[in-house]
Image (cartoon, rainbow, N blue to C red; front, side):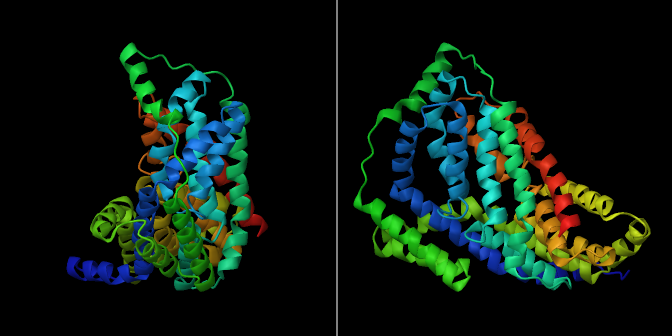
Length: 404
């Protein structure tokens, strides 16, 4: 293994950041577009209509919430920005129907994860694009369509976990006791439930901008161009006044800037691993374990390593460069196909979103469900999502690696 001083390692880290510059820019622009969509008020309009529809059985309500959350990753790429708008007005309804909020957290996390894992649009194009780029950079060629196919089996694990959570784990009544002051807070949060929000011209123009952004993205295979199209149209249509441009940029960076920064650092760190010979040393040390071992055991152990790495960082997108730098050489040595390798990398990355206390996919649901102070981040969001998603992901990811 080569030796480098601190200055050389830092320069190497900075030079390697360019590998994810396009992805980081995509995140920032999507953050700006999400802020603009929220500014238009269309999410509030949709929430009011949704509240009227889901006042039925609890299972239908939770499946509906999971479906609405799924739209936030691909069709209307607002990420977690919809949760503070959608969830707090529903808290009163949840308590009245004795809904277990852990089930709501699991439903929301499903919508924040499964769509980008499977569908190559919006955040899904970013996620799968990173896998393609990093696998190619580490010596294993693969196409975007192959990555999409490789993620089908792991996503089936997510669906399995969602069904278990809604139909079995959180079916029973769960009452939340609240003091008089706390009940008043809940009622104030839910007060806007009966307010009428009319469909306006701005809502129509926002829908046009969203459709145009999605069309440009699909035609050009560039999320940057798609997001820029949406942003420009929102200004041209005056949905967002020009004088609010600075605020939109600031809020967009606030929403997505940290993830973009983690991606840049992860890309630079992956470069350091490669250049210093760290990956080669790891592969050489792992060869003894790989020889004679079954692919099932190898895949399982690799996903456990991925779980440890991604749980600490808390972002699936940002850890892909690191995971790819570690996994691709080992997968080549073990004889895994490109699709099997993609399934392992994608699954390992996704493990960082479900069940990590530092993940947007757990912090977002908690932010909405704890608006009245009655939802515990660890026990009511992190633990349920870990059990219902990370365990099936490891199981189904292992199956995918063996079958593909």
